[in-house]
Length: 127
Length: 248
Image: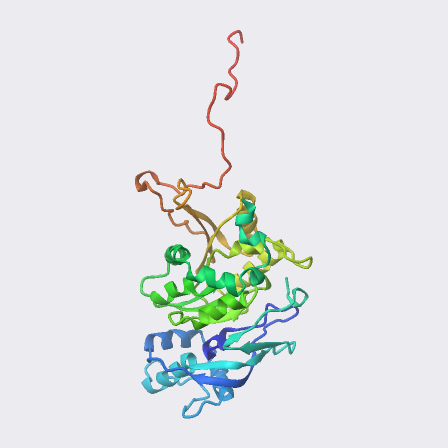
């Protein structure tokens, strides 16, 4: 699971959960995936992303050699150096093993072999 | 006939076990059809020219539809209830999407307004079946559509290719989609061909829009979208309509 996906996931589908965001991320194994910088992708996704949540998730994955500003720079759209870092955060860090936790109910979702398991029992779901 | 429908044989997470998942994904005929339907679904999404976006693939399976999305430059997140299908998708090099293990009947686990569109290939009909006493297809469908509506950006669409069993089933699905706030309807491509006929449910957020045109063998005569799912009417016969007797 890439950090991009963590940024979009929410547990609001669970019963009695109002916002369910952001999911608490815990990482026991993460890897860096090499991929070529894509400025268009980065700009597009940064418009959707909650940046503070992304910066926080980056801290949790504990990947070295990456200067991550805690707030979105005001000139982010034209700041090539920042866009490079943002691209790595969004698309190049893969959480292999870990867990996600609903901030409201504490319900845990396991990430195994890079795939988060969001399955819940019928009685846990708000339908 | 009913035995040909996998959704009658059990829940999808059990049906698509390791063997079935592999069979499905290595069958070149299935790959080709999935490919064509994904291309068409993407076309029906009617994304603005040159706007590669973030798409949701509902029931992404082993990533066959996702490959098409990647080819067109889109970023995608796929969810599926079959772990075996997702493992195939993950281990398959060309599929670059993100994968989530989720039952669509439990809802889309995303925050509001992030997706530029959603596609779903041969998946939604699975939701019409209850696989345990606790499962209520109507409630699950409605909950799915409500949470899908929530995570789509305003004005975007969701396109579902599916194989309805009958008219009632497609109406049932449409009703839940309407109740969740979607507009739209069915687009039936090649309605007169038993093999090429494909049914797409095109759902729209944000007000009424015209449905896209269906594909037909004879483009000239298709000035409107044919709705083949309408009930059949018997041809005129000598008993059609009663004529008054001369003496009146």
